[in-house]
Length: 379
Image 1: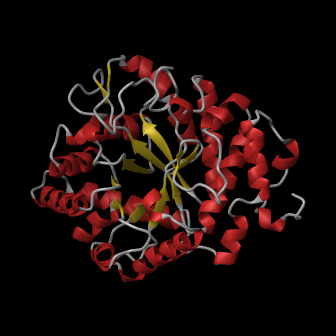
Image 2 (image 1 turned 45 degrees about the vertical axis):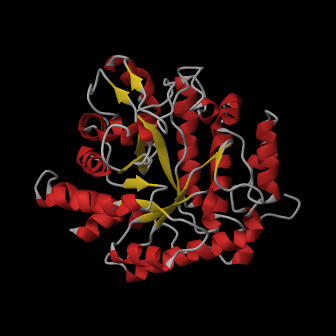
């Protein structure tokens, strides 16, 4: 049981290399993945060695499955890896150009650089509609304020990431685009009725699911007309009844960071872990606070043993995660450092990024479908 719970967690680490304690914890507890933050990356060489080191642990784990190595790399202001990696514009710049082909290619190229360095999971794209123009939390992270644009281009981004070998994570379900509060600081509350949410905010997620999106991230936002007590990330009404029931979601659900103040101001860490898993999150995400990992493992294990969480739910979540890792053949090691460095900040990627910033749809750059290293130097 304990090993299965560990596979259902993605955790942060402290520095640009693993400590002995972190290595032992990930191996012993069968942890499913690691999320990288800015603090974990000083040089490309360090990043390359870190992802190689992380992946080497899976041979010591109970499941022997490659680890997810994830990052928030949306483009714009939410990008953990910057120069010498290609710095992509925010999604809003893509939205203005109204080109699914361009959205596909930009995501594909972004993904190629991540995969080269052993990163196989990207917490992107945002499928939020910028319903409230005063929403600075999402702002230019959204493709558009237009539902059809977000639906069409968001699905194209999903396909581009998957072609590159990266597992994309659609976020923030069921939509963070009408809020004002930042869920990092407190719990946003939405009062719109279910009919409006279903007709507008859910549409990009429905379309992304049809595009075979493999993972969805749940939002720390309370929608009072659906669940007056709990935010979506802790709500079985949202994650089981609506997402899995009504939308027929068969993929993996991951929580937003469970140490965000939207939750910690209202619940203990143990309560958060138990409620998040019971609600229907297959993966519990912890980005920054090392003590949370152990608390979460203990809390979920106790809840399963006490039958507050059905053992069948744990088994199903564990199975979905392993099936995703197997079916998507997630990258289990970085390319050689020379190959990775060749892809990082590639000239073609830089030109494509600059064209998007300039509001252009460069037909010549979109013709290239293969990895840049196979193209002539002039490309």
